[in-house]
Length: 340
Image 1 (tube, rainbow, N blue to C red):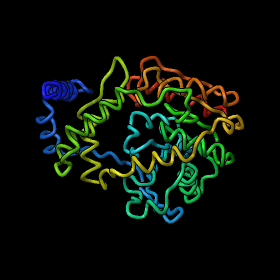
Image 2 (cartoon, one colour):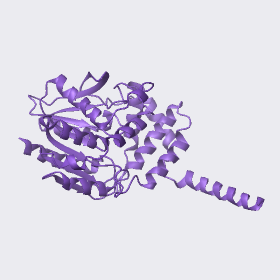
Image 3 (cartoon, rainbow, N blue to C red):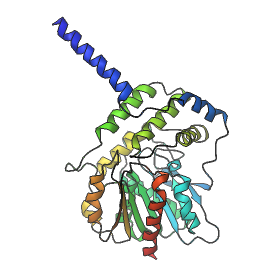
Image 4 (spheres, rainbow, N blue to C red):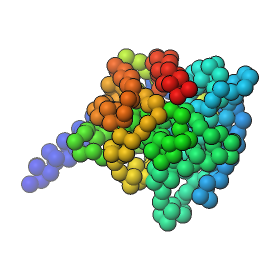
């Protein structure tokens, strides 16, 4: 009996050692030196536009608007995903819209960035994707914008779909990137095991003591590395700079937002039937190597939207890498032109 227990304990220990070492992407060997360097250098300015706030349903929503030279010929509203702030829209992604003459709005979803964090009161005021869609509409209302070209990624794609369904007169065109029409579709694969194992590993290694700035930055980079696809990697320095900017110049990261957004996704259920009624020009973008929302999700819901165009990118993961950004933006601009 004792011998059997010892064998089990030994196996658990061996698995634990394997898990710590191989259960997900490793940080670069010079991570500590890189973090020290970033902490001593001036941070790049990551918010170059005009910042504003609007209240919706008692929640103050933070946004940033970037304007092109001359009179804007339209508006692009960027909707970010779960637990991600407006800073996760990289400049290399949205700059081409400015160059093309469009003004660009980024904003923080509920519970994130400089938007109100719902902590103590969240249990009494749980919200859905439908509620989150009205936040973007409130921004457009404040700025006097009748219609916008809506671009969303991941959960932001789900929110963008909801905007197109519930507020069709406000959406000139729709782009849904690495998203789904029903995340809990039992006929489709769920979150891949490597991502789950890597996330747990990151929390074990760096999430146990988040009082240290270095651990916060390492955890952020570790999670970002879980999202990349095949044949490219993260810009480690930029990801760490962005994390430090969020922590020092904004409000930091809200750990409860993940659960709040997860609840909103689950509570909102399927949009399959409603997707069939979307009438504005639509583009669905998905990577074949998506590490969080598997590619079959994109393949399933895209044909449900009448006349939707698709851009399926080989080896792209659950991110917006510079490698594929130009192709994605070019396809979005073509889709936007259909609306005019």
